[in-house]
Image (cartoon, rainbow, N blue to C red; front, side, top):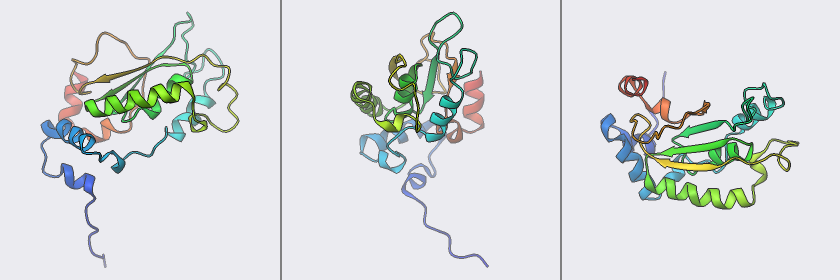
Length: 180
């Protein structure tokens, strides 16, 4: 016997009945009205930090921030929000790019990045990470645009894309649009 259906959360209700074409405006509306607390956890992904630090030991490791020729690798975080993961990637040596559909989110991410790159919080690093003081920091860049459109991509090629928000939000239309 199943119990009563739990009430829908504010985030689900916000997008319910909304066409895919209107999702960008929906996300921007949430940012513009100060509702980013519905999804913002206030720090970078601990799992991403663990993965990077476990596989960043040598030049052949995937998460080494440099190519064999010494060029810095570029990482993209679509749907980056305030940019926690973007900044953390830069602190680990990548040139990190955050993409957001909301102008408000981009401004908040830029503000966060300025502060955090000057004085990084411990939550950007795993316990006992030795590279925090010795690593050269990468650059942080935030772009405003729709991940499923090509107008935001200015010829930069990325070595890594870290996504956990845009792809789950997409559907068949979005996937086919992006892959083309």
